Image (tube, rainbow, N blue to C red; front, side, top):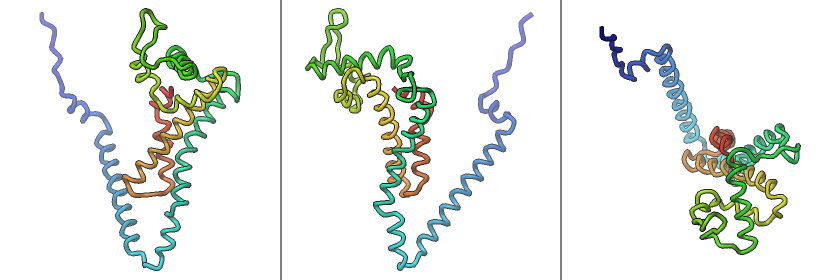
Length: 212
């Protein structure tokens, strides 16, 4: 007796049969349409603003306001991640460190070797510290090519781990800053929604899971 064959159901059919899928899709369609209508109404109101209020509009979106928005986009992710480190007793808030998994076994040793090469004038093309030698340029391109790593040369080797913690915070802040600039130029807006979405981007799951 041959076993009964299970019919192959297309993935699209299975997806459409999931309970609540249609309701979710309709909800997001209505929400998207509502957001677009709201933005269109705001744009229409701005187009109808009298010319004598131009000074007020310039003041609200002037260079000082843009600077505040960009500063918030930089410092908000730094503060959030810094508070998270403090709650986990990361130095100087405690006796723990951020060196875990690959950061401990790969990135930090390579960074320490990079620090020594820059300070002592070693070659960045070839390394004889492994077997008959390895291509150090390829290792540098994969692990150490971030321009922020050159900042570690300014600190003593004894504080290299603390410097690495600072670089992680600085990297997250720069991610929020540049994402805010992207949103500002892409969507032609400058308000406090930019720092909010900058925090979402700078502290996304990938950034937190692989912050080294």
